[in-house]
Image (cartoon, rainbow, N blue to C red; front, side, top):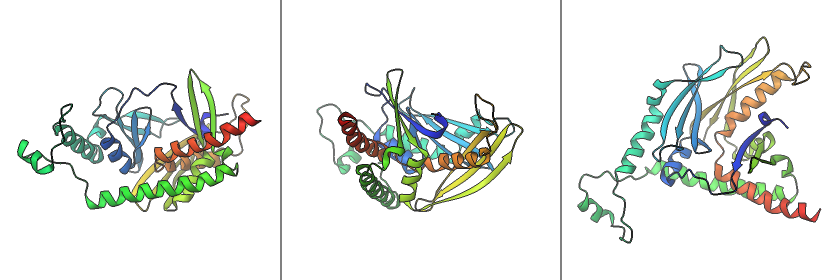
Length: 283
């Protein structure tokens, strides 16, 4: 099993230490960020090259902003720190939303929550965070899509078709769940509004580099997936005749993955575990 072939999601035995305010998590997911181990990231294109925007909650409840550029001149390509991207318009928009959220007075324990009118009297000039109608509609549609996708895939679980969608193994006291390429493809297929475009396929001395752009037509979001596939199998060092194809498929998978909600993955896995966990005991 190669970890390049699936999306790894760690489920700790104890409660996760990183807690993200629901308002921030919702904002980030609505704007195309995906969550992993206390960090939210989104990969997109800038000046014809892939960049990665990250909001890291592991050291700050407000989320620290980072930016990276993919250096395509290296073999294999490497993500390099790009401090200037901390001021990318999308991260600045997040910062503005976050700062307004934290500027709101927090209710004291045991105190009743004031009505909006009373809150305005208590804190004149306070900017009350409200979602725009467009954001509310997008969030409602996202929730409806998630429910439909989970329902459809749950049907496949009962037919034991979903066995190929997940991997599961133990690693250093954690249960590690792998969402396979088939799993990503199945969920994206049910979303039905993702367009994919191959931006780059380049042969290097020791491998193939593929860069793919995916566009969520419903939410008007785009994501970039980049993958470098060696020309040789390891550790045998035998030639891999499918290296170019694998580079494209894995770059496409990484781009698609940005549009899949963590809720869809979590609920789908829980259903899979409920069905197959009992099946494993019977066997």
